[in-house]
Image (cartoon, rainbow, N blue to C red; front, side, top):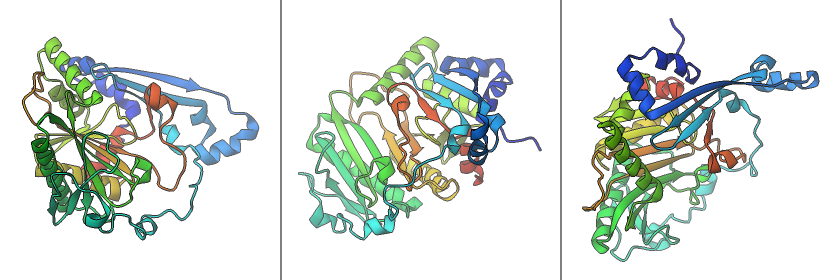
Length: 360
């Protein structure tokens, strides 16, 4: 049996594509590889072998760099970085159960503010106003189940429904608030200041949030330049390389230029049950197969009302990333990610395998 492909094989995989598929890849991506070389002094060799497996693979490291020339995203891959030593957590007793023992949202009706248009409730949770808002229209979907990792297909569909209803109510309250975004920061590594499971929803006025507007602008430029849709071609490129799948009509991609570890893109038709099902399947694989406990989910959506600029072909786009081990205090974001380009240790081919086959 042939070995499973890895990101280090991507150059050869692209070379084997047909002419049309190679041209499509080149319209979106620039690919380069390099060998990073160094010398390990003899006294350091035992530590290198314990930590990384062998001196040889440290002294010669293969770097893969992929740049999305349409969106400006870029990622540097080096699987060796996954084996870097990390420092222990600042508090050894951190745990979800311990944190939830003192849950500030145990009674959300009494312990959270409500929007001026009231709360929206269901069997899966309730909405609240964010006490420290990102934007004028900024709400929270507080989960009925406090453990954020005890999600089910039904609960995620219920949370999406609450977010959808909140967006409609917020737009009705302020008709100029029309550009929606939904996010889920799961646990403290992902920026969640409250452990209890919750999503956030917001609506911008005037123009969409900067990175979403930039993506729309770049996709329109791609259509003008090539006469074809950017998102359709993005899916086709990933499919040609064996990095795409489909769940209930929603396309899933193990992203070739991930913003952080294990990024998955989901492209659907709206904030509906089918998209919720695809999010559930992805997060179930993250949790149960890949051991992920802290993650970010972002749902990028077109406007909820007519606007002057074109959003033709812009999907309901979900981005999901792993944010690392809850028990470490080493940050997963530094100066490279903040100001230059993403550096990632996880392999998109391994992410694809975990989600589509259930094997890590």
